[in-house]
Image (tube, rainbow, N blue to C red; front, side, top):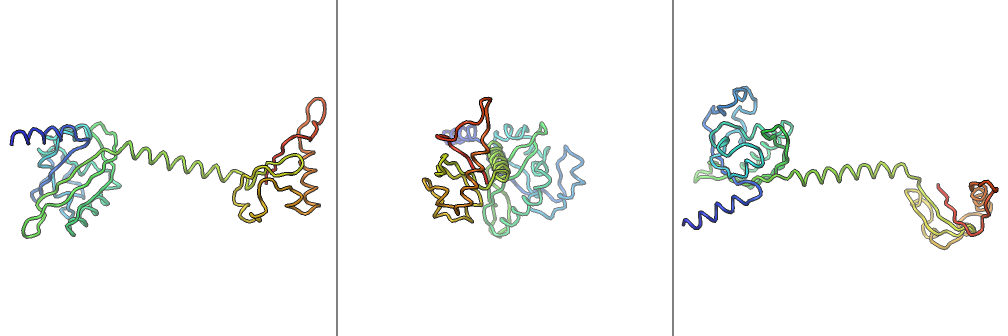
Length: 244
């Protein structure tokens, strides 16, 4: 038995988060260290989450929040009221819905640490019910997922920037030889309108467009080339780009 307890303690010591068990609060009970809690509307006794406090939480909670396990188990600190205000109602609603159906719950929310910084927490747990189907406790795990959430935020920001950049790009960039032979298409929405079967590498502008329009495009490209000090450079052997 002692060996089993030792292995369990060793497991909890190395667990990347914390394990908890919560028990119901007595009616009207509040955390003793914070007199402001008595004025909090969330302590109205109408939601599941504010009716419980930690009776046990493993040592990993200190790394996550900056508070020792005894701060929570002694009722000196309210874990629930450190959840971000914008997410408290959602967290409590999800928890109560799961307990009403006697189903496990899984939550993600921001939590304020002792040093006033914020972390993202992933929580999964379930209710413990007696023979009369009354919820007598909560048991579950808490993980700090701040690094993962930051990656998600960075990816969303990167995708937003990419979409904004794409909106600034032209609809179609055509890379061609000086004889009008298409080498490459870099297309946006416009290519969806044009005949995609015709637009292929190796086709010539005179095959794609009516003769008068093709000649106009080629004149535009040839006269639009930059000149150096010795005058216009010859067009032969050069590649051109047409931006639409």
